[in-house]
Image (cartoon, rainbow, N blue to C red):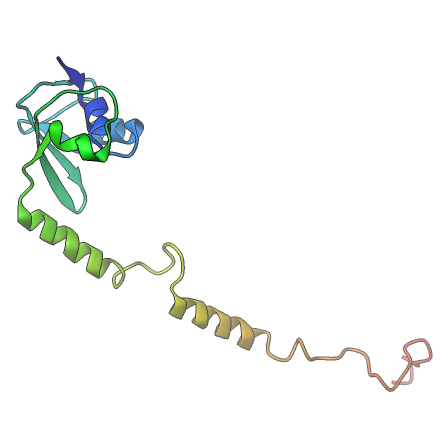
Length: 148
């Protein structure tokens, strides 16, 4: 039995959707035997597939073929994970440093950035909330603007 590489990667839960798996193949992030593959390339039992999902490269051996998405508990029946431990260390380091090196303006603001924005806007509009444009002592209908 054979299956398309994009469909198989989706079925064994390497990618969340089949279209993401297809795009990864088109962008050259999926290789079999060191060669980039098209999404329509068929996989056979025994193939070793490398998938670059930055910051790591997953190395997977095909144990079984399926065209239908399987539950997470059944994935080990279809794929053997050959990814080296140093790749997982890279992933952990990226998770830890991801919060520190997040580019300004990307994603949701942190609590600190939210406080800074609130302080900035409060200072920018300082006094305008309390500013009274009309003097309470005078009635606006009787106020003489010419003699002011």
